Length: 453
Image (cartoon, rainbow, N blue to C red):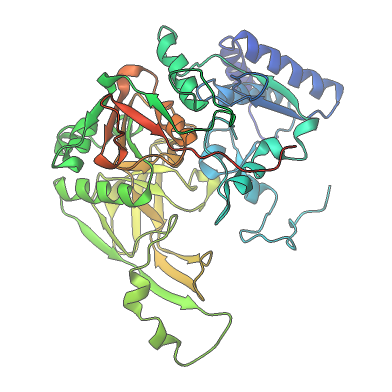
């Protein structure tokens, strides 16, 4: 309830006037349900498709719509609890929180776990991750198979507000990529899930040279020592790539090329064994072995940092201050026990924060122990994975593909981050080249094998 009514009213008026016709229809339906206390469940998606399939598009300003509705309700002193599945998505909503934080959901979940409260994704974009799962497992985990699906009042928003409106041809091509459609509309008897080629404008594509990392960095930043350590230097542009190991290579290369004194930070690693307690454990798992372990979402044993370097937070530390998984910052001071940085994304842009070393656990592996790593919960982010870029708008994107993307949905997320075709460059390696002599990217997408319903 602690909101300035006048401030929320002004924000609502300014944003309401920018809604398009589809967004206003959704806005009116939601407000009508609130006023009548109908308690309806709504699902907003960027729609584009036929009767067979309906897909969710990026850039249709769904978040902007949510922000407008939230401001309207708060201007009337009504309670709104914005919740998102990830920290970086929650930061896009005014005082949003993750579902884990809002509903006290335990971090390690199994079928016996309950929330500590009393009982009371876009189809076009990246699919849910099912560890060791098949294509069928992934499809069945998607929101279109939720038991809540049939109770939703579904609203499509189709106008891409991210891409400039005078670039209709480019916008239409993005939708084809999102739907996994090739240049032709022909489908075979297997529902169109054959290997297909998505043709890319040759002007957007570059072949990798001998020094591929230098080529990528030059395309994104030019002379890395001339980069001004400011918000726009790193929030308006990004190097995107599918895999974490490629991100680490690019970040390590850039930090080694920049001027300034670097400082190395080493983690303190240990382990917990729940199955067995033995005096031989220290012998079985040497400290050098623990130090060598790398996992997504876990900081490296060795962090090389410099003042002015962009970093990304890997854990939800204090969401009310904007410190959550995915928050990007610029280092302003590095010390032995604490780092000082300025936030450059979200509603807390410009705020100065302190980041301590913390203990991070990683037990979701097939290893017989849980790794304990005491380290700063950050990684460099001159480059980032495509998954981390979801939901963001960028002026310049360098898409580096030393290997093909995992699926057409991931490719769509990378391509649809930009606001203009002129801001996109694709640099592909030998592994991502196709047999065609044209500049093409293979649709690396296999047919899901799941029961018809």
